[in-house]
Image (cartoon, rainbow, N blue to C red; front, side, top):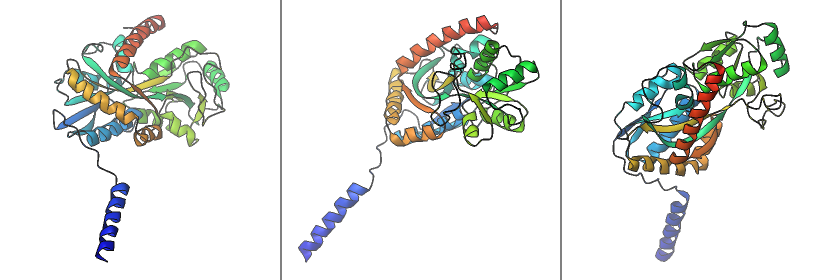
Length: 322
């Protein structure tokens, strides 16, 4: 009996070791607390992604990663704070690509986006959707264009600020379709959504509109790019309706202050790459409305430099460059 009991004890112990997940070993980090600055108001897509990243990194390192929302000026206020922070890994930035590629071309900012901030990794991209308020008497893109042309200058559209990717994409779209509308900037995507729901603005082009379209709270009109969304098979792409050049996705990336040691960059980059291979991490990103898309520090740096130049040319052509 004693031998049987010993065997049963061993079997139970083995079963528990198999069924109980082993806690992930935390890696040492040079500081105890890390602030991830999200340069937008709480509740938007960038804020959600920032919190998912903070939770994931807190599991992987001995440091505690926390989010702080520092909105305003299309994200450049929060970005400037990070650019001026000590490059010791204690302050990071959850940035949208507009902070690097468009906003500095539109108004003076207190930092050089290509030298005062350093790329660490891209996390995801947010596909956008053009939607209209239910108060607008349109049901598709063609009706929207016709109505807007019949009411020049009467419609308002919202974005997260002058120079944001959504703002530039919308202005580019309006110029292409020959429509005049008024831009109303907000401090965060959730505020733009509320304005559309209330009818204060009549349309928006942003990832934050997609959950509302799923709930039939807004009217989906079109999506930028060359592929329809799987869950909106009847909503055409802007390419299909004749406007293939309009850019439509926004990146969500982790950056740090310029001068950050390569060791810390590599430490974070590898952790985020490993996280991107985690089904749970990617599931959380997808649920928040974004598409997981990991990019290494070097690939992200190259992509931002190219986009910075491309938007310089686009904004000059559009007459929007400062």
